[in-house]
Length: 127
Ligand SMILES: [Zn+2]
Image (cartoon, rainbow, N blue to C red; front, side, top):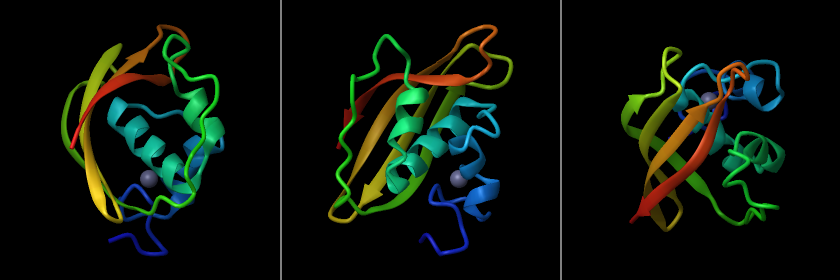
């Protein structure tokens, strides 16, 4: 359950000290899982610019229309592979819940040498 004091991604710390510093550009996610969490928070907070910024140029949509009516209720990281500060690729399997349902996605991430930040490439969604 997300409380007012915790970050939308579910970690028990204030938004500003968690995903907020990534959304503002003050910091970059160090791991693919951290990027995944910050992207989930961006969906919750309708941070469209951040979602596009952290999307690989090859797969990034021209624009992103988020539905403000979607009520995201929780994120659970189920598995990760690679994606650490020592990798250039990684995968994260997560389950995102919203009012009325949930979705599971196996997402692929990459980090371009030199650019520093992790980017979302694409993912396989299942119910
Ligand atoms: Zn967070």
